[in-house]
Image (cartoon, rainbow, N blue to C red; front, side):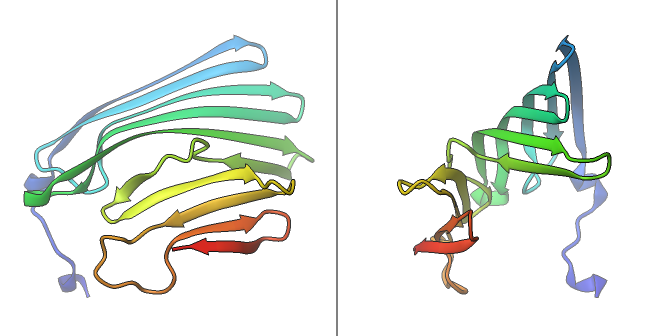
Length: 173
């Protein structure tokens, strides 16, 4: 039912912006990429940052590609109106892709490697990073915390998973 969704006049959502993307081949197998977006909003919109930038370094060697990325987000609106709130964060990611055949490749990606806590939606902080367990196997910590919510639905917290067998090791609430 379209009438159940809140509506806004299009004039209320006037958004102006500037985007820039640059790429440069440093060496035959090493390139750098930068992109940035700046937004000006007549009325802020939840989930829209005023500034978002990315800097990436790509290394290619035969069938292997490795990417190191840095993302900067400033003034991301998590709430608007009288209780306006904004978020600012930096993220680092690392990815590797190996082409097994022309049409099939394997890839792995680690995001938020510094385990920074940040919010995209108010009341739902994000945090997660792959790590090495003291026993020697890789594990992943990921979670959303709902501390600002009046009621909980299900088990919400920080979960840790063994990446060998994909089993949950622990839930920290």
